Figure (cartoon, rainbow, N blue to C red):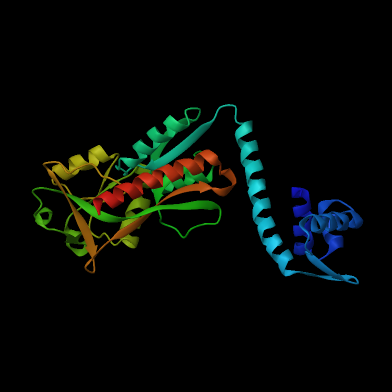
Amino acid sequence: MLLRQMKYFAAVVDCNSFTEAADQCYISQSAISQQISSLEKELGVELIHRENKRFTVTPAGEFFYSYSKTILEQVEDMIRKTKSLGMDNELQMRIGYLRCYSGLELHEAIAEFSKIYPEVTINIVNGTHEELYDLLRFGEVDLILSDQRRAFSDTYINYELMQCGCYAELSLYNPLGMKDHVEIEELKRTPCILISSREQQNAEQEYYQNTLGFGGSYLFADNLEEGRLLVVSNRGFLPVESVGTLPPETSSIRRIPIYRDDKQIMRNYCAFWRKNNTNYYIEKFADILQKLMTQDKRKIN
């Protein structure tokens, strides 16, 4: 049995016509008919029942068609990925992550991936959600670790990593820091500290204010270290998500869950990459990252 025969048979079923299938496969109608007859002879079953100029697909043919489509798609995917890898003289993967991310799993995933695939050079950038989205959209990174803020697009692989709870990092001297959890309404009197570049401050504030419901005033920091220094000096609270394993609280900072209507606010985190840029290495890195995050979530629970 040849893959070519499977392709011919699938084309006849898809087109519901020997003539159209022959045109699609760039062979004569008699040749495609002969190939399918040879296939039936080799299998010892009738795949297509012919009556005059009409035909119907037999139950055996339906079964064979379904499996053939799956196999042919896998073969095409294998060929595409092999060609993609073979054309890369220098294998590299460009990864973007949120500037406010502080989990340990990304570092662990890069270390594990690099140990298994030392031939791949990894380059890292960080940014806000919108900055990462633009980098991915214009092909400047291959994969990003980011929160979900839009409906999933068919242009991208939307690889869900985990749902995580939202927390507020507060100064030990802030009265709210003494609570087991804090309602989002209670935070309106405390400035919200966001990690953002100057260019993206308005977009970040708009999202946290209008979508997540964080009211009150806002302060901005360029990076997590600067943001946590603002927390330590009791200037405001820093919203963080439990994306994997967060570093432990310090003696000056408390991290408490943020609630809305008696339930903790949850966020969805994903690895995103363009469908037309997918390859073996990107998929393997995403698998490693999800495995590490899932393991550590089980430990926490």
